[in-house]
Image: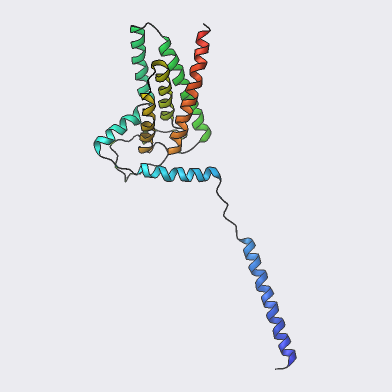
Length: 218
């Protein structure tokens, strides 16, 4: 093999190497990098992961009956019963209708804000796991969005009202149990209840003093 043939082979090899390099470069440019998750997406993923442990939790019958009480404690139909009882009690024994009017304003305004917040966030509720045993089905009763938890908001609202009216702290200890129960029955994720409880505390606290100022004007 002469020198001319060697140069020809070397030239072809070099051209082939350059060609392979260009092809690999074009392929690498075509590879679409997976976009990194935003902070909210990471929080959402973390929230659902934590909530799954509670969703899949199974307890004995007696414990579930207790959990069910907390899950239903601040539903709209139960709250209606609270107000009928409260109205009769304070109207008869104290002849003071302020005790029913002000809490009623609290509940209605927080209910409105809950519905508006749910529409704003638009977060879907958890899917029910039929493989997990539950004595009661609270999930099918909920048709709107998940964030924030309305029951957690009302639990915080009542805790504020009971504290300011009667000076008792016990209602604050009920809030975490209500939050847990709502998650347990697939009605919410953990963050839904946390946001709901914080909104309930904040709104009810501000609203109490705002109404106090308004009622003192008359």
